[in-house]
Image (cartoon, rainbow, N blue to C red; front, side):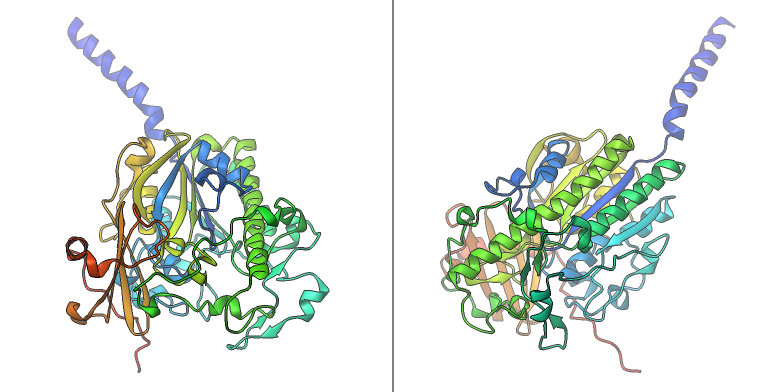
Length: 481
């Protein structure tokens, strides 16, 4: 009888102790997406970047030093973030095709969280909705929100606007007006995000998945004057390499038409030294402006006592060429376009750690799911790196892959901790017709020479790593009725 009483009492005690855990609310998720943000961030070792809020986020989380996008252009990269599928799996490489046209049954990460009891909301730029594309209503519990804000406020800049080759109005590539943060879109996005957090805190019975997308430092490089004043342009880093890599195929580079469309940029030829310095100044200023807006979100989490219950993920959709190799914008497979910042701060995770674990954009979906205690849907290209967030000395992938289409070919890239190889060939075409790029970052960190012709064994090894991946799908096209 005594033994039975003891066993019964012990079981009751275990049940009482376990009950709060079973009934505790799952963690919230704040996903911060930043357009065209490369690792020009203080915590990534940039000596001039003024980014105190991103640095503070890294101090309470894990900074991933070898994170890569899946394609260096807005819409396909964001599709990969939201679906956990690579562009070559979906078959969408352009800006105008909606991912659901090609993959109608895809379950997005926010949709997955919705199905598991979360309130999912999107503010600002999460999906690319320009170029005839659209948002994805199924991803959100309520319609997504975007601010109404002017692109320019200075009369001189408004007067410079002209139509580009596609009929869109374009002004100058930069603006530095003495205005408040809320004059431009990103300030308004931050204000709305703080408001949503305040509502969540008051109605705390349901966990939230809040995706907040900031527009800068995407062109045009626009920020209030005080963010420009943070920098002495004479001290900004200028491009070290201005030539394309030796022996690289010419089509692997970009002619940066995105930049040339702005009214004060040359239609052809090189960007001169003074303009280069001014554009780099603008990129840094716009980055600091967005950093300040992110700080408002982090401050709100602290003020509302939500920090300890919220997973915060910072993601840049792709990198950006700032004159290196004589190139600007994204649209390549090179390191400056493909490498991105990812910072994760999670309850119970490592703090103030940097890691060399290699990850891709598609990995965020399963990682956030695992951190929130949710099952991961089958069929994703991504794999969770939650183990690295718990232990920054853990590893993730042996290599990452990304793509970029050019001239009828798809450049399929593989990057490990030493090499990047790019296999350029037509989709479903014979491999013997491919052109190959190979760069050794231990010897040549600035990608000055394609060594594929003299490194057959390395090329063979890296191609073998790619072999298990399925053949890329061609670009999806509207079927004729």
